[in-house]
Image (cartoon, rainbow, N blue to C red; front, side, top):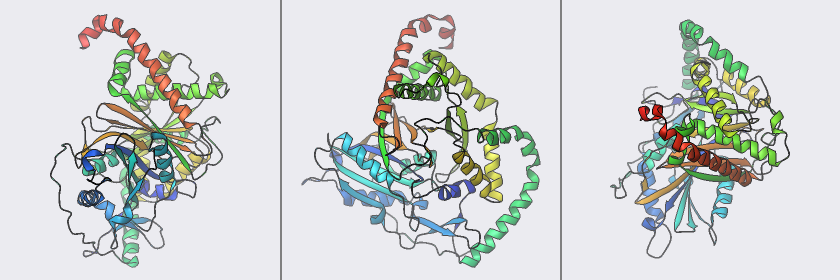
Length: 475
């Protein structure tokens, strides 16, 4: 197959295709807000011709965005091949909000766009340019299927699309020349060879299996125990989504963790836990009696130079102390839980081992684990935190003001929470089922109230922390 090209999807990448259904869209995404003035034409409206050319040039650095899926005959395993009918106008779309173009209207539009499934016969991504937003703003609503990228790989897309300087040189797009795809027979032969070689390689997994046996057992055991039934879970969900967001000053988050303890992620998890407690209390739920409320925390396992596409994550489950009334004690419990996950349980290595075994043999291994965890309602909410650039970025001179990420929700959950840090801000995106979680904005308000509580507690303790000899030594 020297004159042809294809690339096999990993088992982890492939299961995101298998998990998709009429009600469960499996794309990740983000809503990026920009100052529109640098890209406005004299007669009004955005310069879409310039934006299109700019996007095409950016795609030259990420060829995955010009590739589509093909399937290995007999095995139904997906591979990437170059799309010989690639058309930028199918993927880069343009729309406008009606007046007054306020934030509420924008969120409703984003929810509708995120509700729509991607076409599996084409490269699985879309960019929507949305203009007519109040305060001279426009939005870029980005969608890419989870089989293409995870959250960290999505940062690579942002790096390719955006620039660190407002006056960076614009590149000319290169001519696109798709490479020939292999025949079905060639794909079949290659897949058979991959499976045979994979089973041979398993013989070398003995030491790694012995080393990480506890982590493997932890992963399997964590997927067996069901979480409690609350408004965050449902027997089924609709295909329609609501989208909301919030933003916090990253310095405030750092002040909380420096004063009260833990890491930035611990503050995020404690704030989320407190918001869940407040939200359930407001709905007359006996929160003090809830045990085993669990979060699904994707953990990045991508090595340096690990590429800007595909998925390199371990799927970890952990209980959230929603029954804890005291916010300080809640944060302490979160710190203990995350420390256990990172240092003692070895679940990350166990999850990686299972993914590697599945990749060498059959994706069904982790597909059945994933489906079983969903069916048993092993977790109640997804929370993923993605580190982004701490400096401003620009698109053709237009500064990006904020970015609100989206994580997909499984078929029996009502809410997914994703975070992205950027230029001194911590931006939250909330993906909710339209019918099962209509009050997502009220949840956002409880989150903001919980974060304000932690800010006040940190401010009250700041003088004693500053006066502590131990703190002075650390500084």
